[in-house]
Amino acid sequence: MSKEMEQDSINPEAPETPETPTTDDTAASSMEMVGPDAPSVKTARFAALGDEPTSGEQSPMDLLLDVQLDLSVELGRTKVPVRDILHLGSGSIIELDAMCGEPVDVLANGKLIAKGEVVVVDDNFGVRITEIVKRPKDSSLQAA
Image (cartoon, rainbow, N blue to C red; front, side, top):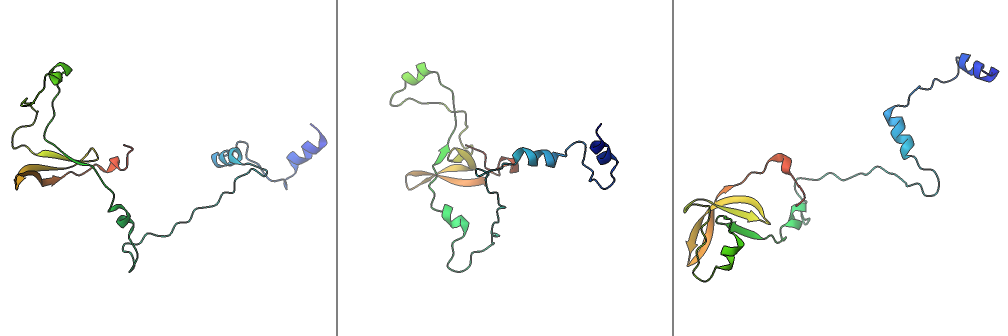
């Protein structure tokens, strides 16, 4: 060992350096960029969301109120071989897995949102909602 190295190891005024870098040190050193291409990193600051908009302002939910959704009602399902599909014609009956009087599924953009019963209103079919389907908390905003 050289004299300088010996003095550094003996010198009590020399700052102690950890033998192994901590996780934070490793992450910081691996992400450090030096030079003109180094990105400028700033902490994002967001305004707090209020419960109610002040007079004349729109709430964030107002932006979504005019979004169109495809709403469909599913009476039932069945599996049919292609051979039987090719033989379908006017007057053919397709038997479904649902029983008469059983609740139907109401879907918005293919997602089950409610259950209901079929009703007739002025010669048109309709659905009376009987139950709103609750979604599990862990299924929030999954990709479609």
